[in-house]
Picture 1: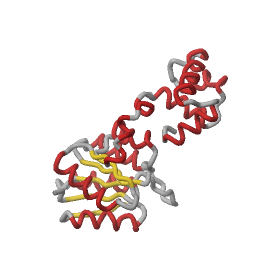
Picture 2: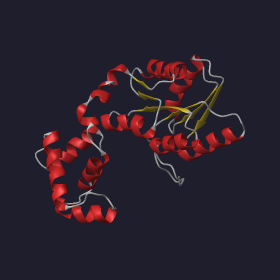
Picture 3: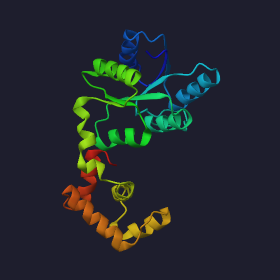
Picture 4: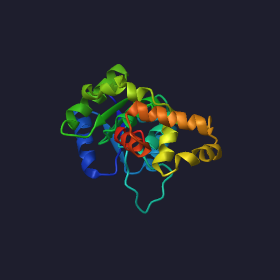
Amino acid sequence: MFKKVLIAEDIDFNDIAVVHVLRELDVPEIEYAKYCDEALLKIKKAALDKRPYELLITDLSFKPDHRVNKLNSGEELIAAVKQLFPEMKVIAFSIEDKSYRIKSLFDISGVNGFVMKDRNSIPELKKAVQYVYNDGEKYLSQELQYIFQDKTINEIDNYDIQLIKYLSIGVAQENMEDTFKEAGITPNSKSTIEKRINKLKIYFGANNTVHLVSIAKDLGIV
């Protein structure tokens, strides 16, 4: 079993569940961080001291306060950790239930496991820790496996996401060409953008761009 684990979580109550699981698994060293920057510093220092953490269990959402941080979310922390220490195991432990966001944790952020905070959190997290340790494979609970089979989620690319994001913040379709050019996003011709938006509306069964954005938000795409 893992010998040294770091928990990144800003709510004490949630720490209790994680600690309970780790103690049941006889993990001897359990440490904590309430901020993402603090967690990354601890991980760097442990590596320098030749006593590295073997597992990071992190929430995704961290409530902002008076403290200024460079890393403000679990995704940002995971990305930074995986860039510096790709061999380190990471499990995301979150209330997140949006399909696309969960899938992107594996495809983009590189997590080794995801556990949703709910009534079955403790047994599910215990199973995830054991699985990641013993098999080294990615862990996602059975009821969430559909995420990897969902054709809708799998066929949306980064260009589509950027397009929907701009629509979601109020950029009108007729202004999208200029916005894409300023952002250096290609292709950025008016006809290409119009065709892509129409394709997305058909794909998601959206009546208009407002409906399209609403569906995308429900899926966690934006």
